[in-house]
Length: 217
Image 1: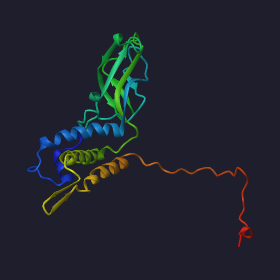
Image 2 (image 1 turned 135 degrees about the vertical axis):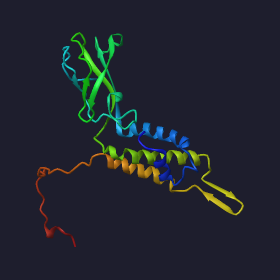
Image 3 (image 1 turned 60 degrees about the horizontal axis):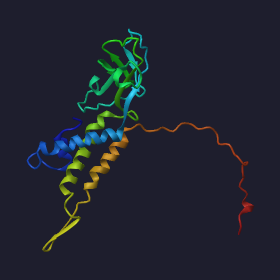
Image 4 (image 1 turned 90 degrees about the horizontal axis):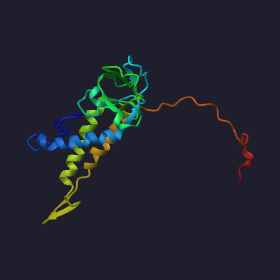
């Protein structure tokens, strides 16, 4: 998993006596899936680059930064599906291919055996990050989002305000903090676009010089 129930409990200020692992785990699973959509794209049947000649076992995906889609904190052959096609787009002539290893950052796929030259294309299905991310922050972000889901599930059916005699209860505003902080962490995980030196600006209609005499009194 990308986080642990204990990490989630720390964010929401509860102990294991107050909420056990079994109550939190469904929210972690939900958060992980949501993060795939927030950080990555789903790539289906990506045509791989590489010679199909019966001896080549190295192919390259269109997108790098392959995602750990099964959330086991290791990016390997279990996170990608590779197929060889006797004819492109013909499912009847498609066969799965065993993957020896992958280079997740650069998108290199190393197959266990080389596809014969009778196959037309080799494809892969996987998730890829839209931009390279700081994966060390996955645990932090996932714990925040799972905590937000847990708290919302507990408070969702409670009216915004309640009263009992002289007592008044209002939905705590700090619930929103978890989601806001999650959004902040996600933003920090993606690379910062750096400014580059731009060319000199050209005047389209000629340069207008300032003249103090133009000021109306």
